[in-house]
Image (cartoon, rainbow, N blue to C red; front, side, top):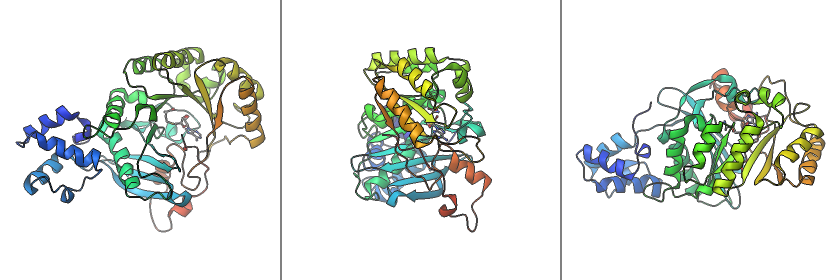
Length: 375
Ligand code: SAH
């Protein structure tokens, strides 16, 4: 695990840690205000703390957790993707997406992923390790600082949404992800003060963890990566379906919706000739009609060497039409970052297989369309 960081601790824990370093407890609040309130982590700018205390406190409670290895941007700087190296050399990615009315960060919750979905680049590599709470939070705080600096043209300065749709299965790193959500939603100086409704946790469908999440009193938006309405196909596309079947995972989603009043987002990657048939649209429509749910279709972002491709647009349109005819609200995710290896894990995979070197600039990574533009 990485060194301890203030974002691993709640405010009371930070006070205790600061006292343990022989400093006044109120320094914990000052340090937290810099980090969460002002998005500052440079000790030079923390002029309300005496210099000696400042360097001791920042060394002990604000260690560098994420080192940027590669930073890519497109959409006139409104989409930015960073590949980070963690203290042990693991690589994770985060994406920042600016829109006229909101700024969203897509974060990783694990280095790698153990869920083995065959269309996902991260799934191919397996799980390296869980991220710590602070490693998750710091991805958000880094990008919040970038947004606050006015770096995103014609977008708000304030980061407003976080989606756990980067690398990893968030509910397989449950306690750290929940702690991270608490840090993101507590008002400053405890945390970043985002609305829980604007935090989306996306899962393959770990049923017990969905039930547990419903009991947390944290009304985050749940996204369920369904990708097929029938067990036969979902067993292949989302292998955890072999453990918890479509009916069971949807039941868990409906109890989450009932408990929180939050509409569940059903994620469905459109894969040509695999899951995009009209009969599957109709079956999906029957499963979801009348439920507190909407469907988010994601054009497949083919991973390198993949045998699968995105569905053609007319097929996608027919799929949407049938779902809507069944009364199910449906949107197609807008594609962002098409030049920057946007899909889950692609940048990390590219960094491993094509180490940085002369002529390995962002332009060369161009090609894949991306699906990461969550609301
Ligand atoms: N493990 C979580 C969150 C990470 S991935 C989950 O599975 O929900 C976020 C979303 O991106 C998931 O719906 C995932 O299935 C989808 N995804 C992964 N690779 C993709 C690809 N190549 N093209 C389109 N969607 C992809």
